[in-house]
Length: 471
Image (tube, rainbow, N blue to C red):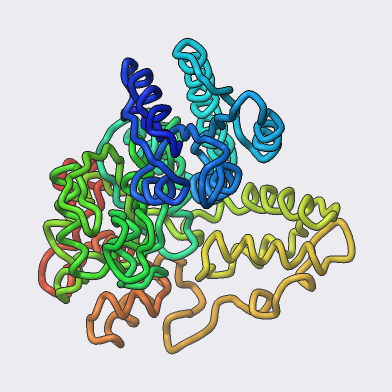
């Protein structure tokens, strides 16, 4: 990307001199003759550096400096002042200007100040990105586990992290889909680039296009300045589309085009902007079911599902609970000034019996609540919600009988629920609190056909181990 500089002075001769001087270097240089004109320019594009006179008719350079610091904090400002007005330059430096130039300015001095200002901007932006990366990398490292299902997930993360392939992460709510996305980003070659995320379920339909692709000033009512969308801010990095199944149908075609062409158009513009973005999507829904219902484009699904990662629910990785407990105790001790050391064996037994409909997120909430209300250094059943304490195997019909194995009870429960829901896998999986994919894989494990008559499809990992084509 080229370096953009804006020169602001009501004196045309000064503007011409600086434009001539700066354009000898590989800079794009624009000019404005007033602060108001400069703000219009800044609303239309992002500038790396603004060189502005202090004293101008109307809004002066100090007021312009303040507006720039608010609306474009990454833009560096250099102030120009006459020899007898150094006090103005001092005030500008105290207000956040990087440097000042004394008129009449010389070419050599200008080049030196501009070079220092641009280097300062580069370091400023780099430091901000690194600070954000530290925070996000800490979050990414919270994805822990030693169970067999999680070890397979870690292997998949390491395999795809260094590629450019799009990734579709599926799993129930609370299983850590965003943590997997962040782990892929920070363990890959794009870790120095930005990681941007958008929750498709939380964004109003009218804001989708502007949020993703950006808009030009005046593109719609209320667009008072140009805006870069997430595809531009995530350039050279990763964009996470969380809960992709909730994206409006009209936007799916535009998203597909970006994946194919690797370029975007802002709202209100016909200019194509190339983007280099690694895309990751997550969902807790069964996308093929959404396709069959006409809610999701099949071609977009294939574009997103280049690499599929299906996160197991917590009830399928109970061996990871002790490590997760330790993590959450450490976190919420620090946040609440407590000194809890452990959970009792009775709590661990409760955790092993509980179905965890909210998965890891629910476990975290339980631990946080218990630390807040606990009176000692050990968490006991009394520190947890009554629902957890009373939850356990419940008899219903002939599902639970003495002598049945866990495998037999699970199989009987799944088949009974499927029958009760008229062989509707989506409804049955919702009732059971498992993903549709988990249900299909269970049916396959039992050697049964799906209600449609075909064999239950394999997830990508099973397909590799069994030498079959994945679903």
